[in-house]
Length: 185
Image (tube, rainbow, N blue to C red; front, side):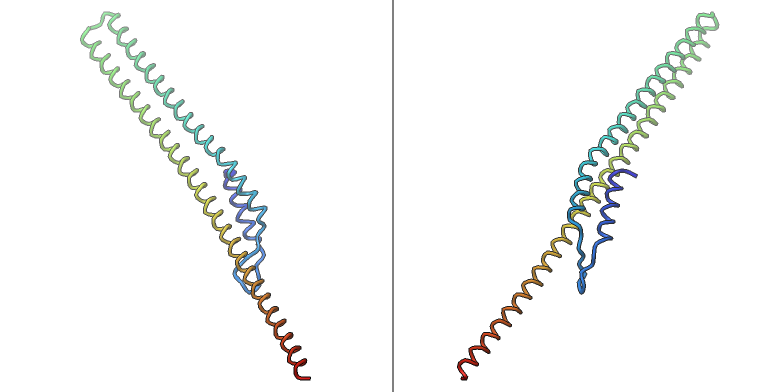
């Protein structure tokens, strides 16, 4: 599990621990904790990129090893061919065997290189997809939290506005009653 995955779980825990507002679907969240987790996600994202670079470097090492092994096989095949000719065996047979060994060596070397390239491409593709998925998930969670905070602020302002309106209406009514009592005397 990557650091980003752990941070996303922490973010979900903060949301799960949020206190519900009575008579609404809204919840109170600790904005400071959320901002801290988002910042940690941003700081860890380069780490995921470093891991992807390590995978690419590993792929390059695999390719280099495969090329070296292929060159060794070719060199060994050539040495065997020269040895056969040097032993003064039938020249045509030696040349045919040397050509066959060389062709097999080249075919095997090419196969190793293709296999290493395919594995490295698959590893890099998986790492890139995983990193992109983590970034997308973090961005989505961040947007959800921002929407929740904005909704809570809007609901609170509406409640305050309603309370102020009721209080002002009560004051006006009381004032009117006082004026009515004064003029009624």
